[in-house]
Length: 263
Image (tube, rainbow, N blue to C red; front, top):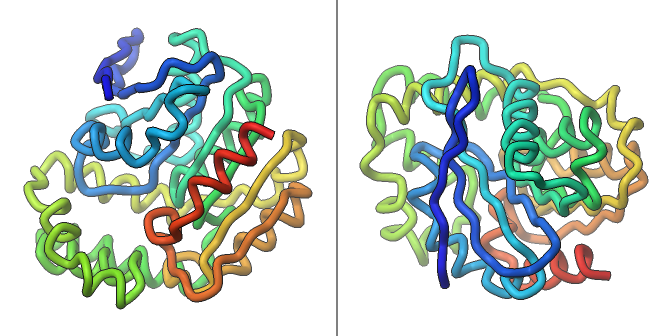
């Protein structure tokens, strides 16, 4: 499949993104936190979501380099809106995962003209004590430069034990090779997650929404997803026995997303 890796430049920042597909409907995927640039996953993502390529043009934004001190989820949502405006994208299907789900919620609150439908997977609108402990652990490992421990701890928190044991080598290999710039970006984004609090604004979201979570998520609790669904009148689906990476592990999740965005 043809994947286009591109860049937009504004008066204040530049931002990479990749795209694929030939459909008329814009589909924007907002990814979770990662220790490397999203463009390194471009072909893998395009292959995983190839079923969307006929009906949608898919856009996957990266984050601006370097991220300024104090960069927030609000800043990330604003940058995403700038990217979509520059590309002439409006009334899009928005799919946000984890931190990307936080970004997607704010985008739907602040720029409803950009959001036709909203799907949120493994995310939250505020940080509870358990999530705070988890992200502070990631933050400490990153700040200490212990990249092997960070990769292992991140993978073990995100994937179910059985899935991680089965795919341990490719998962850890995909996290290797991060530069110091990558780690600095990871630290800044982790801090942005820890300061995220958008629950009180969710009643401003009026587009059709779907919320998906894994019952065994160790990063965000399933209650986070229930709270978002209740506040936004969204459809809610809980995958029993799955963890944070339900978006990778559940075999039918792409079918559910495709059905939601095309019905």
